Length: 171
Picture 1: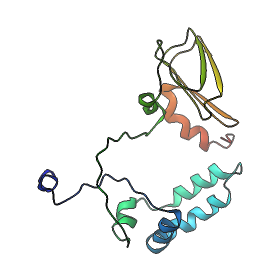
Picture 2: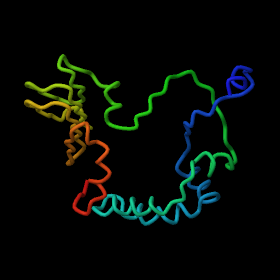
Picture 3: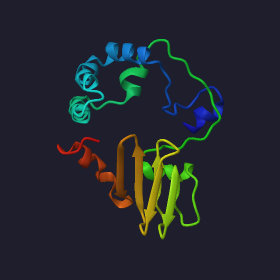
Picture 4: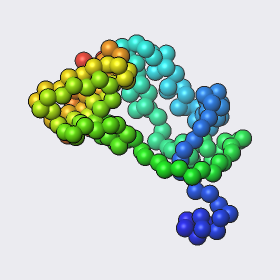
């Protein structure tokens, strides 16, 4: 890979793709028709309390294959662009710390956040004008989005999947 890249004749696939919904759906229909069949009921449940369960059910039935192998290597009308940029994989809420302002107590925040004896928390409000107050807490992740709020200790963030897939959760 180093030799290929060093030659200047090849590019490295970083796995960043851009497409229109119409284009990717057409390619998925051509190369992954089973995926669309399983996902259609979940999309029909979008914006309903059943959506997350329908989505989990659909994803459980999907063949485990990367978009690269399943679609992109077979797709027509694919173009490559070079770029000189950095990349940060936002695989979880804690990765957001690098992109949020931090106060003197180590709280990373987006929104109107008021703290007293609170440290090392992450607060993310989808709407910047939303207000959150933290009092005497640490190592929490608080996420506000519309009429939904998540409050979790940062050591338990991996359990979000279990919570969402539980029958009682309507996040």
